[in-house]
Image (cartoon, rainbow, N blue to C red; front, side, top):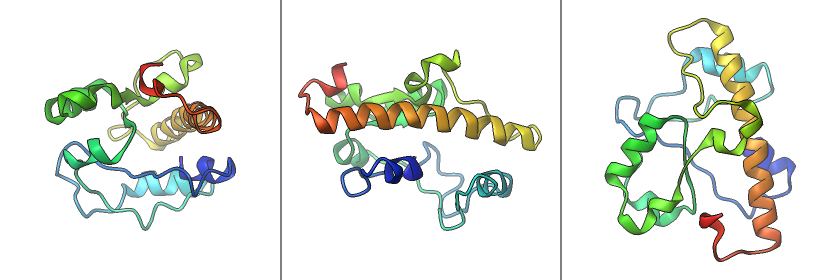
Amino acid sequence: MRHQVEQAGLAGRVTLDSAGTGGWHIGDAPDARAQQAAAGRGYDLSQLRGRQLGVVDFDRFDLLVAMDDANVAALKQICPPQHRDKIRLLMEFAPEAGVTEVADPYFGGADGFERVLDQCEAACRGLVSVVSSRLAEPDPNFLSN
């Protein structure tokens, strides 16, 4: 997403962050297999470290984008009621993919991480398109659309 935001010329206008719904990887670098697959596409994940999402993130961000239904459920458990419309599934932004959740690569081989990158790149293209159009023509009902 960071790469696509930069490519779209939105780097100074869009704030991105990544966080998990659980605390089991706080402070850890991304999985070595994820880093290797990402590096093969020119993405450097080595400086990233895990953090856990908090209630403050619902005030800080316009969208909270989850990879799967389990994460959506976890977000809804801590989400203040007035921010429920900010929670979305990433794959909503790539309807042509025909899936609603990003695949879980952790229990398979390296090809699983490549599939996740394919899914994320497609969905991020869609998300960047939506964000770009909203920045060009601000819409007070952005989260309702």
